[in-house]
Image 1 (tube, helix red, strand yellow):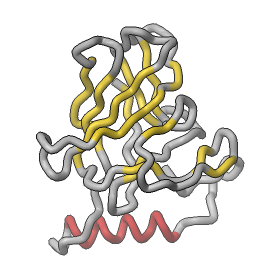
Image 2: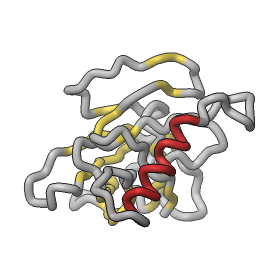
Image 3: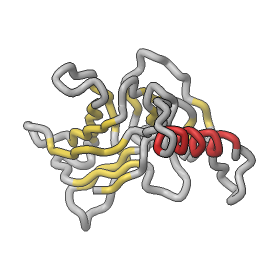
Image 4: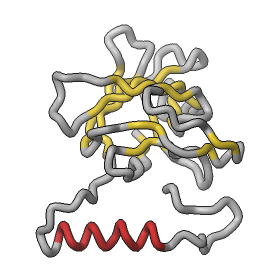
Length: 160
């Protein structure tokens, strides 16, 4: 997710991927307590008012934005307190139905104490989609995917 290059199907940064795969093997095969799980979609719901999608992730302790948006090839400041990303920079898109066009969504990480310690919520909205029913993340061949957990692992792409 975060190690690719725009114009190269054989990216230079193979070490990061190798380390992550090694950590997964040490955790899953040898039982070592090494963080190796990326944020993963658990639930997707429409908010009570109907204007936002609420996305719940597990393996998401320390969920934060990090990195650049490859589409524009410009860096975004890594501000620890920033819980929001603008549409086009969040990697999220929403739609009014499965058949309608997905549009970039503004995203906000919401800290919630009522969820388990490993669960976090992201709210998605766009003025172009007043009643969203579907969402996706990092669902492009090349585009922004800036959502990471506290262990520095990128969120999995999804569409639902």
